[in-house]
Amino acid sequence: MLTSCHFSRLIEMQAQQYGEREVLFSRDDATCLWRGVSWRVFADYTRRVSCALLALGVRVQENVAVFAPNMAECLYVDFGCYGARAVTIPFYPTSSTAQVQFMVDDAEIRYMFVGSQMQYDVAFPLFATSASLERMIIFDASVTRHPADTVSMNFDDFLELGSEEYEKELTRRLDDASAEDIANILYTSGTTGVSKGVILTHRMYMNAMIENDKVLPVKEKDVILNFLPFSHVFERGWSYLCLSEGAQLYINLRPTDIVRSMREVRPTCMCAVPRFWEKVYEKIVEHVATLSEVKQKMVNKAIELGKQYQINYVATGRQAPLWLKMKYKLMDRTVLSVLREQLGLDRANIFPTAGAAIAHEVEIFVHACGIDMITGYGLTESTATVTCARVGKPFTIGSVGRVIGGVELSVAEDGEILLRGKSITPGYYRNSRATREVIDADGWFHTGDSGYIKNDELFLTDRIKDLYKTSNGKYIAPQQIESKLIVDKYIDQIVVVADRQKFVSALIVPSYSALKTLATARGISYDSVTALCQNPEIIQFVMERIDTLQQAFAHYEQVKRITLLPEPFSMNRNELTNTLKVKRKVIFEHYHDVIEAMYK
Image (cartoon, rainbow, N blue to C red; front, side):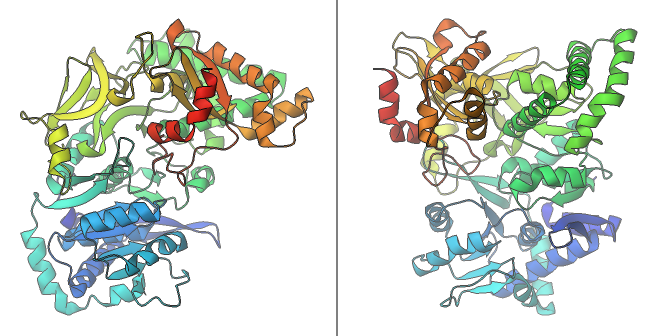
């Protein structure tokens, strides 16, 4: 365990301990095999990257961009930059040209690493207009370059620049490395406006690693599957923690491959967002529906026993009756273990989950299946974790756990969550105005999230700025409603509308495949997806399912009207962030006429 180690030294020190033990695994699509590199090779790559950066003339604390999907090379560059005392700025692999242009200009990037053809095609045109960009280094050697490209080079050629003559300078920089150095600048996804560069120092990471190590039981024997992009603070901090513990990382290149990767890797740990578990829940429910009546009853009985055992007793810290414990163990061994094996979760340890509200139904279901979902809360500005559930300790469904060490948490009179501590950002890069808006005179960071503490557990309600006030004066928390309804298999995306309106309505992107199956079963004809979404019988069917799900809400919180949209919300239209969070303001602008029609 090297959780208190400065990142510039981490990989080399782990290589001294683990040597030829494999640590980073990537999938070879040609052979369908996962191939690993050892700690010693990892350390060698890291040092060669450091020296090559020095050869290019990278200055102390200079910003270097990494624009790539999850690849081992991303980690080589990260830790190589730390050795050279440079700052890495990871871009989301799905970033648009305009987003990349903004970050390049804001951080005055000279050197950019790109992963695949998609990132190359986005980045290359910027060299003609950028005042700072000089060189681009390409990870994937198969990338087809533009005929006029004189600015790029392959990663292998880049590594060759790092000759022995730079070793002395590298040693000097390593000796001068400070915990106060900036490690990363992570640009926010922009749900609340213009993207801002969050400063994360090495000291912030070191404190976060130490405190997370106390509450997350990750060990060197664990097998980690990376799913979220390394540009996401959750995956980044989690991966660094796992490397600090000596665990093995299997790097999933394409998000669409995750189901296959889980079955092949059979991870013991993986961090994820609630939407991932919502999809797992929907798939299992659909799968169970295809089984024979006898098998359906058996699976449903096993899940019901799992709920009784896990939620009524394990979650509350009470001793379960012997009869329930025995029945659960039998069902776990004969039924639930089969479900987990089909998902690739048959050797699960812990699965940290954060990033958005999670439906109670989904959270209960995951625990009932015997999967230890560790709910938590954090932000980019807090170096990820602020609160999380504790393994083996009582927890409440709907909470996001207890505050970790090193972080102070306070709830303001208006319900806003305030943070202060060693892992909280000092501010936004070159944006003192935005910094002053969120960090007050007493050093409290204003998160913009609302919540409350009960029995030492944090419960989130909504974003302060996302709270709606109807024309009747009632406050509506849209994320609470959306997280309840999104579990329905006919709903793929949903945005609740209510601000200054007489009642609550919703824009819904349905599951088009599910609607088509429904239409076929009911003999409903249609000549387009638009016609299908406008069919009164289809709309009424979806509305009835919503009414069933929202019975627990107060009358003024319940959705009264819906519109089924014929196309999904899109990043290309700036309706979603790179982390797939909804940009409500943009959607309300794009669908203004549709919304108005629901209130006529």
